Length: 224
Ligand code: C5P
Image 1: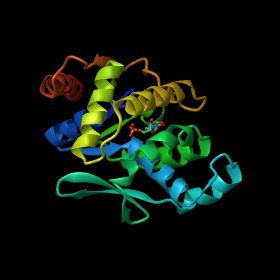
Image 2: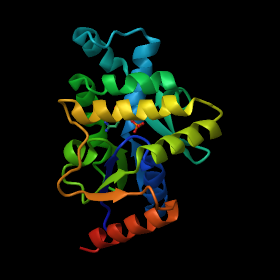
Image 3: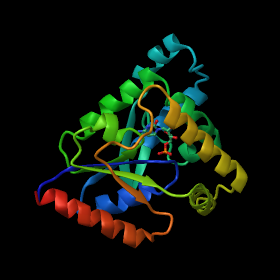
Image 4: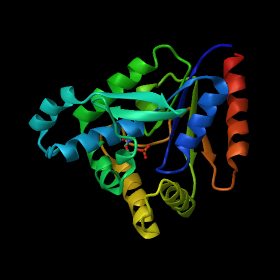
């Protein structure tokens, strides 16, 4: 069957990674979370005390940041300069800095270049904020996913709790809302629905229902 590029964008914590992961498994595609790449850059800046408001320092640091993904026990795992940082990048410390870091054009340019490289072979599901509008403008299938803020905060809360990182519900809700605001209003590649994206609000959908809907869209696109 024809391999395509599937771009999944949307608000923070609306289940993009769950959907992308399940979809990639079902189709035997590669899944790349572009958000994890911005989180890994942010972690690097925090750990190395890099003041990211200084353009010259950011430009110097970027070539030293190498991010790759590996499957460990069946899970896509993020590596920053050869070190497994999967656990660190979901911390609140990173969540609080990642959206400002992701507004920096030089950071975006570096990430987008790597992401486009990853899509050359097609057969990829990538999720993020600008995948359908910037990274893969010609993606054969674009989904814009959203859900109500409370549903999203509850999902992120449950996820962190399950990973042994208990946090306060209200801080999570505020973090989601702040990230969405920064992501949607930044000058470079703001979060917005691509004109040719399919909008899906999954507040009241089960994971299975959501997956079936998207698989039906994939079938339509791959049979053309
Ligand atoms: O997807 P995730 O919530 O992990 O992304 C973390 C942050 O990275 C987002 O809030 C956003 O600021 C940034 N991001 C981005 N562009 C992408 C993916 C993520 O700006 N394509």
